[in-house]
Image (cartoon, rainbow, N blue to C red; front, side):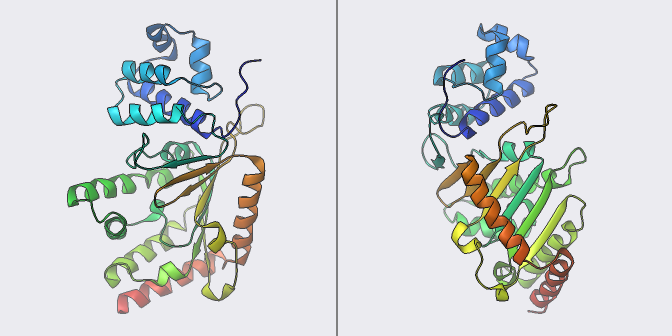
Length: 295
């Protein structure tokens, strides 16, 4: 039956997804890669499907023949050491550096994303000016070149929302308070809020705002989070289990046990039902943009 695999499936799934993408970038078929590594195709398939534990040595071997960058190799070796974790938290500064975006490829594979953000506009919807200011505030020790690189990476993520082929369905709940908070000049916030109003008209995006007078709701307790759900396979089952992702100041939290997903689902549903309708939220975003613009 194979080795029992306790704990979170997230590190194993990432250890399949990232090397698979590196193999594709290297223009290697699974068969040819297996031959170079002197493995069976079945072993390659199990690793790339996140169905088996992976040794650090195997990760290094794969990254070596794929020509993966050193930062990626180091991060994936760090992931290999986490595959037995029961809940998965990774902090920045160790083998998994802040520059290695663990969640990005998971978002790209998701078919549905439920997102709550209580402090800033979500990165998926940030304008370049807004992103630059918030990144400077979050990383005051970084120079302009590094800040610019981070801004470009953040803006590049917008393609997830706008891609032509199977864009994920996004349901987004935002607190009203950060939409009123000035970030940079009034024109920066006005542009950001108008961008939110515009993107909310896309068929795959629903944005709702929790008004400040809505009273208590789960958001202040849960913190910001995303629930990622994945496409169904031919058997009608999801190709990967749902995953909760919560980015924090010094690291990221990933959860995929059923009772954890259920808890966050309930929190999101509660906030969604407390929010303004999509139309009323769009009207509020436009009105707030005018307020910021007038100063």
